[in-house]
Length: 143
Image (cartoon, rainbow, N blue to C red; front, top):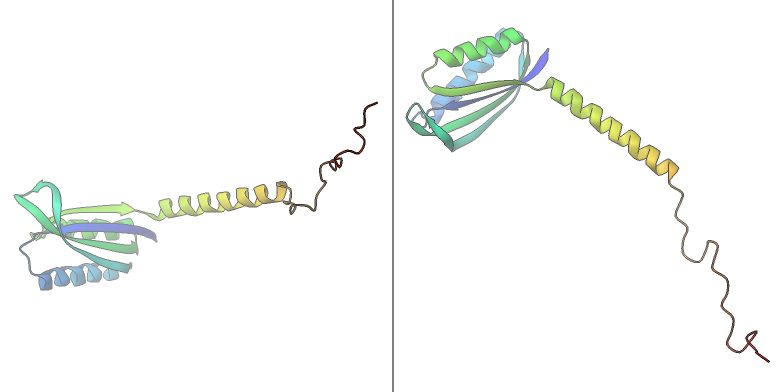
């Protein structure tokens, strides 16, 4: 099972109850295909970067799910035939998460190595000190 993030934009004139119905339908599709819906984040109404089908705004919804490629293919097919969805994007994120974990472990390893090779800092006055200064008038006598 792989992890995916699916974001879709719904027309701005659609009531929120219909958006909830669409999310529930998508959860049913994912569950029926053997996947799980991990997170649903309604991002709300936002301005679009460019006009899509004569709309300047849209209601954004982000879904995090676990499933197979066929699961995502079916979700995308449903979004394609649903009139209220004006745009969607599916991204596989499990490889990015693996790469991030690997980088994090490598950084921790390098930091541990750096700490071991770096000598311990000595508190002031405890380490080898500079030669003591001669008191004035002692040892500097010139004949």
